[in-house]
Image (tube, rainbow over all chains, first blue to last red; front, top):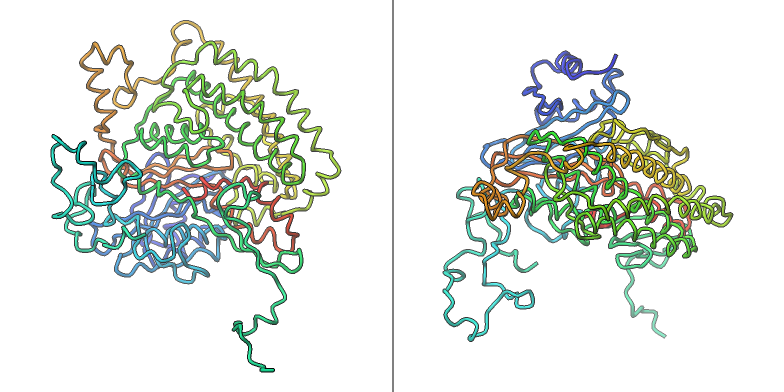
Length: 212
Length: 408
């Protein structure tokens, strides 16, 4: 008998009761939510159970929802049962104040770098990870760039010396008649627009970004 | 004579009997910008530590501010040896989110291009394995035939390496007759070349001695390390996204999945060779199917999605509706319906996944690429432990590590 979403859901509920919530099937993929301290237990169960056998970690990443106090960061796991060829996704939510999540490296060696990447970009602290340090960004970085409060550079900024790339101060002759852009001096390094969904986080913006 | 040392060495460094070697980040043998810090005992590797991120370009962050079509150009630059697969994988992800159903002819045309891309990807990888084991000829020889593939890309979309090919719903234009002629030429000429290429390597004593037993991995470890694609199949696991979760009508085709047994460099080479033959087989079937379409169906090259498919230029100049869609698409002013979708395609290196979350805005709320290369590269230190220095190079090239895909 092939494994179906229904069977997986039943087995999970039988084991964990109502601790697992938000069972959904967007585009046919079983999705649910687990409490953050249970992530490893759920994965262990999915891995060991002789019927479920989710022994392949396809993907591990995180999402930042700044407007959900106490559960700003979601860690998303995509697991795959290659024997029955069925996938599932589960999420655990944690706060950005104390983003502690148990590591999955003991179960899946592949989680090692995926967790390092997630730490690198979201600052999620994977408890028990053997080597939790930045992987794609420079070690000296002081912020977590994929969090929403870290905006992309405003493309119209002119305070940066970028003359080699066609930006920067124009020669006086070329500037004649041009409309002066109200920019630079009275603006912070990163102007507010271009950050959808983020309000009032201006104070948290890193100011040392241009140095890097 | 004073016994004081003028050069202060750290404690214990005098007794150190191993050598530290930086392989990369700009060493020609790495074929890309990544670094391996090897600890060597003579020529034997005691341990290896990989460093990645030298060409990290923050694609996932950039994608949060770009409308869907501007993300296609980012996917080009993941695995740039087979960018059409990335482009189409991305478009199929969007189609899945939007609920677009593509016509069969589009699926088959896509398959032709994707399999051509797979051939060009494997061709590079295998010939580079040859280069790293001392045989440059094969590499130079097959470049000529990769060129034929690139000419087909050129005919279809206008560019060669970073193709930015296709649209949500299909292709930007129909395949021209020249494109089909070039495809026919490729199908006629390529098998003989591939055969010759194989006869240069497959039973070549030197090549076999260099690759058999180099960098092996067991199927259990490969699965645990998240291997996918040819590298997993070389270890003996027949997982292929094309067969397990068919997309773009792969279920209509007949093809085999070549598998190896030991997961070493030689098996990876053979699996890639086998896959090229299978790709050819798929292309032949697809081309035949494309030719069988009659009447109006024979000219279909995109699905009907006005909100996401750029209208024809002559309509933009004459029709109000088309002009509005054109403007909205170009300026990125189309709202993407909210949803959460994971879609995977079989890329050159394995399962290339796109995890897209939309909150109903004009750009994705979050986009994550599952890059196969990044995930399996972490097994490198385990695979090279105890091997010789020259094996380190050949394992790297036979894993087909592409820095662009690793660093995103």
